[in-house]
Image 1: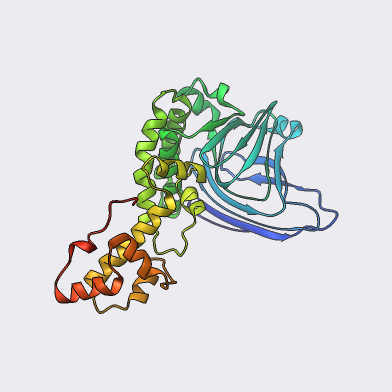
Image 2: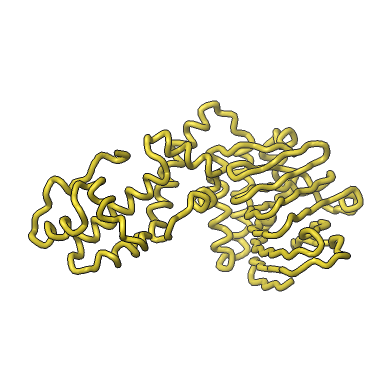
Length: 335
């Protein structure tokens, strides 16, 4: 394992091939107030795996991790829990892939757009089938008990996303991005803010929360797509993972607007290409296409004609002559 720590930020990674005698190992997640023990297996004997993670430490611990292999297992059995000196509340939130969590006698399968909670004082394990990217947050149980009396009933269960949960995910992501530049006071504040947001996510029982979430989420997802149009293909899985939801949720959000996610990406690329053609008449059309994630421009003329009623060359000719005919105004979104 290689690790580099700096001012509360820790990054580490490991990879390798597992021999036939491999049977797991003890792993300690480090924290200034005392490590959190796990027993980990990284995959099937004879297979290879890759694991990387980074964390920010405050009163709690925020970890982003990525695993790829034949299936990992991390567990805290009775022997480990009996040695535990402190009680942590643990949040698991997959960003891509899925994981299965067993806490005490409760089992839950977690997918993007869901989260699970567990306490470190009872037996706990989670299983990763093959690949996963996730956020894991350790918070002092005493701190959370003061914020949410319903935390106990939420343990060991898959809970759906709500507006507070998505706000929490954005906060955690930004905290990890800024980890190296945060001083001790800022890291403490970030942990307390995470505690408040998690409590709000657990306590949320508003029957209109799903509608409110959709109203907030669709502009956020569209904004991410607009910033990422240069990525060739721009898979829906990437859009979903970046916004902490499942691919099914992304499709559902767009279906409610009357336009699929793929259609929105295609329309926005065409609109940006047209804007560049009008603004830069001398720029080669092939270069404009590559700029907006369309490396293959062979079908561009037909797509432009279908959407704008004119080919890129016709639009360029109109721009050069100073004319923008009504045929280039575009059709209503989704048509």
